[in-house]
Image 1 (cartoon, rainbow, N blue to C red):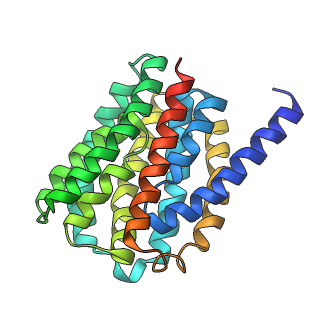
Image 2 (image 1 turned 60 degrees about the horizontal axis):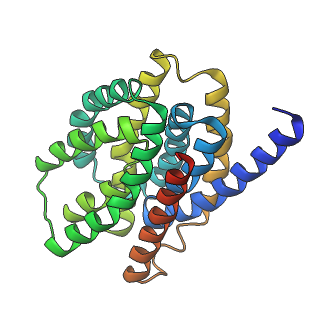
Length: 246
């Protein structure tokens, strides 16, 4: 890749990272959804996933820092203990799949989340602490395969009774264990090299800068606008990734 191409790539990913950091800090997910189409385009679906995991790690660390005082650590522990082994299983499933199939799976997954989220909101789920362990196992496996599950993770943490800062911080702290496990698994399988680490943390720095501005916005938007924003981001990103697979 030529120097001008590298500069353009860096500018595109940096700008997307900044916007993704703001959005992810406000609604609790969306950081990797926004970045995923561009990362898949520049790096391919396999290499994009460990980079996404590193970016998501930085994004989650920033949310933990912002909402440290209201995080519910018992939920994090139960969720993480169940999620870690299933994340390893998901990663080992992913590396055996065809790249075109991965792209199609990522795109369809994001679009299908829209009606799933609406159905879950109508059912008004309420979960107990031990049930969050089952959620962690399922989300851990899915995250190992499809790169990002923040959108489907969200209703379960809301169903536990968390909201606003408590939701943002607790979900981020819980998911961090999955991201660390995923990074270690990709490294052991040879997909997380030095270049991927550098790229992930450079984009993550832009995400971190964007997330700093998010805290003041969290209480400003009405709930229905939050939901519309979530679904719009998922739809656009899902369609973008599907278009790349054809």
